[in-house]
Image (tube, rainbow, N blue to C red; front, side):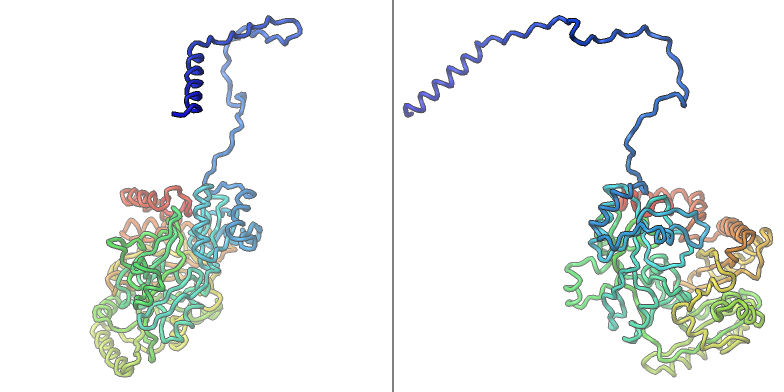
Length: 560
């Protein structure tokens, strides 16, 4: 040890010893109060306590807690502009008004903002922002008009996420018959691009031109070709979804391994929706009305474009006269498009003006079965010929006479109407100007009973039978069917609106009581289903808590 180190050690020992023996410093004495110092006032004598009324109680000024739909526009707007840029964040009253209501009976609620994402990263940032601020997000992918109330904010001051600008067709694969698209792509935009490669969209019944393809798939709208409808989720394939937690997740074959580009290079097509692993999480977001997450792309299955199509119609006075023929065709997978319409729906699809619709109505039977026989690249004439003969044999057996035309019905015009989006105005608005749809799942043999129940309700409410549209769509290769009643009414007639609203509410309850399965409950149906099946509602709330624990995704819809 050196001398310098020895000196430092000695100093430390001396300092430690002095610290132990050091006396505490004397505390300063308290000064006595003088007249120059302020004197603390004496307490007043205690008075008897008085019970305060609610009006007399002093109000505390508390900082309001953040709640879904209650974000402050100024602060929220600045943060949203950082994510999207000023051009894609709107507080314009005219823009907000477009999203505050639709053509349904849902009450109007004005959003605070409308934002327009362009890529998945922006959607993720938006959901993370909503979790921090407890804002509510209302995803909208289709253009107007809207009919079901699911795109109307459930609370005042929400943020509408307008996905209609995400219009990229990311991939079209003819070999695997699949398309990868963003949520803003409509049927009108995808149809010509698919047909260039010899592919055909699996369409619902004459969708409106502004309807999002992904939006239709998420709502499980039935397609017109039952033999290609293997599962209730068809034709939806893989998805990329931003859940309410802010996590980006890919479902089905798209989950990996590898990026999409690496999967394409290996020959994969993101067509199978199953997975990853033992999960089918695409089913979680399908039918959820935007309450669990936001899709940024999805794949949809397509079919080959026919080279020959031949349309047939069969009229009947009662719908039960057509049921057995439909069952037989679906069991043997004969024909492509197959559906039943009543005369109002058929006339509205064919004509655009009320006077023309009424003229066609006069010559039509009450119910019409429509089916299409198609031939493809290989032996198309032979295919059409043998299928037509088999169908005609079945028809004779069941006492039905299919024909290629009915009075006032141009078969070619009807085939074109069924093969693409509706022309303007949208066909459901043509008869009276507005329409309220009641739809559910059942089986074909039970449809006559439900039609009878609907008629009994209309008799009680005074709704005209001539203003009721009926659409029966076999699904899952005929195992079940989608039954839809359309109440058409004039929006500028207060008495007619009130009558339609009463019929809508009463019919929904009556049909549910008779066994109608409302697999997609909107509006007032939600409470009916909640009372009918509380156990399923409890399970759904547990799922909600996993994927959107802060309840930022479209709160106020479904059971959330």
